[in-house]
Image (cartoon, rainbow, N blue to C red; front, side, top):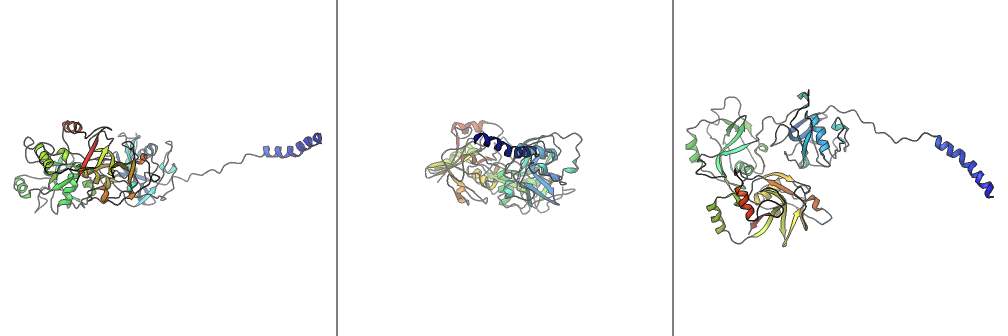
Length: 434
């Protein structure tokens, strides 16, 4: 039977095998790329230079943003080329340049780098996103234009911007050492400086200016003194009708208006805005610092920055039940980061960093989804979520970069380091609270 079965099996299977092999292989379904839509791009936000900013895309007759989920440098390269630059040098997350408005057009964008259009990259599809504008992506492009590129596809948003602010003291620098905590508010305009009309100027506006300059709080200035001093001077006003809420991290986020034309006679009934700021403990003058120390009772450690290379930056760590722990970066933004910065005696936050950018911590992760409104004095006062170990990992530790006062030299930093405050993983910036 075996001699019969084997040829019979071969006879029966042979034609089937031949037919199967003769059939052309079935092809996997190919995805036809839709034609690239007519897109326009622009850089927006604050503060920024001309080659960086929040990326906004004009699609379907509406401007929108791109979510930072899965964003990579390859994505940034494609977008920078759309904008007429040769390449990208970096990208930003968590709405570093401020939150956009309207639609979030793209999410989970994944480019290989060879695509000619962002529309050719993989994504969830146009308008399909589960992000908020707290996750708007930005790019930093190399400041070199593509040869022959025309600007017809690049629309700059917010042509009138305020990028640089200073306090101009009326007392000579020899009599008033750094940091400058009080003076006339001036904004850079072209190659010179201009003033802001103080009509309707209040503590909220002063708080924003102080935060930008590295100070945690504002105080009332002697307006009558400045009024007498400024009567004998000619002014060049640039802004008026500034209306901040007080929680903005930059003056550009506040509503305001620009003067147009001849502005030498502007601001009738008002005068240049004057601000006085309260310096944090690290930057207070010697006598003032000693006096403040003498008035303060014994205090307990509450929050610190670890892993930063400079004063005012690092991984945020909190003390809870005698144990230091970190914060998960879910929904971590500039408002919450600014609460930390001001709590530590710095100004508002320059950056709210995610993804353990200042190194991974150890131990517990105390908080997640912190959502501060701005005026809180501590992160514990902000709405937050107590988490379990499964919710977050130390690869998601939140960090900050704070605005610090201009000191013109590094001696203050060295002084701070000698006392265990400042640079490196082996140092921690500590806050003492009652």
